[in-house]
Image (cartoon, rainbow, N blue to C red; front, side):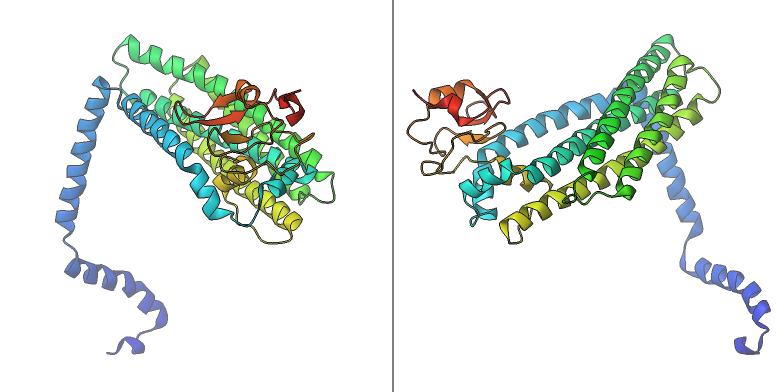
Length: 337
């Protein structure tokens, strides 16, 4: 009998069996199960190693060293990236953009969003580390004490994250008051939801810090880690939105499209390590956060370079690259009278 001759409802009943028979002819189920068991034994052995080694701390130290090295390399090569990315926008235009209220507002929000995203990432890693300790057999007091210490640290960090989320929402509210800013009721609502979600996660963290011996401690930490991961994803979305806002504002003010991603925003607005500023009128220009080079930046003749250096922080030892501190307000402070 042809398959088409079978009643449709009957055909649906037969379909799973047909598929399973076809799969059995293709897949070696027993071999697959053996492979799963092999991975399971491997995971058990890794758990044993975790009892002796703080692998996460070791990896963290390796990554910290690598990131530090990458930061120095990036600082040394940053001017090349700028020249390649923005050859058509001169330093005078960029200095003017740094001063523009709309650029300052959008950049302020981006900076806060990035700080919040970074802090949430650290809290999420701490939560995962706590989950690892809670899941381990409580065979001695040191493990319990370590887990309790992590729980208190996490509660403290999340309290700070909650305050930062509140400040971020306040920045959104202030920005929404301007007709030039693309912030509406929906964005404010998302910001408030973000802060409320952190409230719930913070409550879980406090509960854990009070009683890690409770039967539900393992479930609580896994719920906390899951929810915190969702909040971190939302924070990353906010960062991407803020980057788009800065890019749109800069492009509109310049009258042409300028590509700016998360890294390029600060490169575009702050990096003057290869800029010739000798013909640029710098009076009353705020220089906070400006990056400059001992060999690549050309200042006007009336600027005291030693005074600039005294009010700057070096980016990387021996790089010759500096960033002007926030206490140095305008170029008038550097004029050699």
